[in-house]
Image (cartoon, rainbow, N blue to C red; front, top):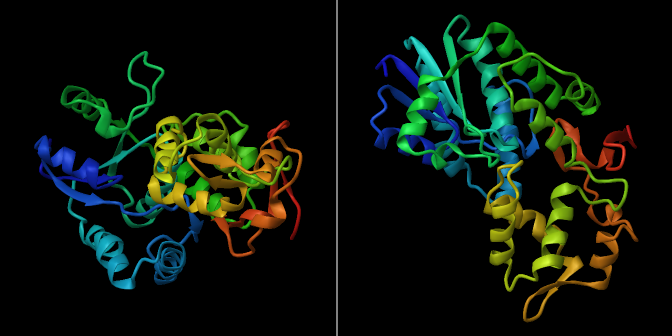
Length: 314
């Protein structure tokens, strides 16, 4: 574990875990969630960070001081780290991590050209069907993952950069085309993450996306006592997106007219109708300032039965 190694991790839990296991080298924690809110392709630029701060301020009431200290400071430290022999990226299989990963690779393509870049990516372990986070792995498993880390080729990095450009474009239709083509790449979890991303656009059937429908289904099936217990159910059963409490809380709040809290949380009559595709909730949710990457969320519909996207406004 060379001291000339720079480790860039997906979050503080991973960084602290690696340090506790005495991995040698320098550490940068990539503290972003580019799977949410509007993104632009010029990672690290002044306009990029301005846009991201506006999203966090509006949606999560993050102060400028906290945003700079928590996110931008780490990025500025990354800009200063140029002397390393190898850059090791520690990211997971889910959408949250995969979008952050391709944004970072886009930046590295421009600013660390020629550097040795490798990837430690958790997901399936041996024959297990369960998907694992990096911090789920024990010490022996994590060190084996590191030993078997994947050296990313220039083609891998160029592919990640290309997908990032498409993700930041105003239309997800080209991403949909890409997701249906078989690719030879070491980024083996990227295409499944893109497929999950496309299902975040509102459905033709009832106007809710897959996450919002999952929330209603979880309420109907489990009748949780509180929103906190509802979130625990969601965190336990949903692995594709890698979302945390804050992301689910935001979605739950947007659906508040579809459930009521008595002794437990129950769907309203309208909530049941929406879940059963008997009525469409699209008009209630539509927001012209809601983005997924570079695309306006409500400018596209996802046909669940045919698994296709349709642009409905220009």
